[in-house]
Image (tube, rainbow, N blue to C red; front, side):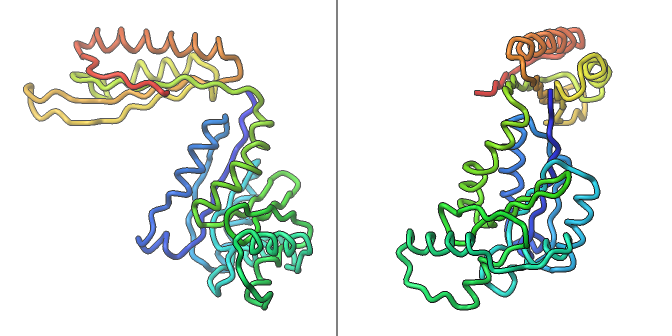
Length: 276
């Protein structure tokens, strides 16, 4: 199974001050994982040109297939993402005619009376050689930059704009990399078995299956303090791959092993949640 590696870089002082919860990273990670991608790193940094530049250079040095950047594309003084990205890639910013047409189209769609002053034109100044992407919801175009090994996508930080552009223009490209992708998932909420009790069996399962074909994770829900308060643990099982039948067979086999082990340890499954 071809798995593409992705890093997510979220830009914004508000993400680091506790003002805003980083829901963009959560949403992007979920969508990328659902189509067979692997998110290797999530970073949040300030609206600072030097820090953005450094973060971009560090990321592309790790050679992910994709670097998704969210935030900082607007017209205000603290929207510095494209300036930082250009600096990191040693490129100049220039007024791009295609980006300018996209900006005009966005204003027309929103029935906004506008003057193309320097503040607004800032949103159409993009790194030389990059490709603008139409924003179907807001104003600022997104930007795609292709380096030798990494595709860099700069998305708006406004969630509905970011989501619309990603779903329409970026996710289809990611799906092509993986091809057909299938996933089977469920979680068991158990009583009477702890993470430590299940750890040996989970290790054996992981070692006996192909790399990146499964994900097993235990989550403690309650800790035993005495015999009258047994441990509670959620066990998450994910099987994934290109062959639907193989994915399901693997999932069924792992589920059977875990159910038998939980029973052997005198534990009990009290709830099963399956992916819709």
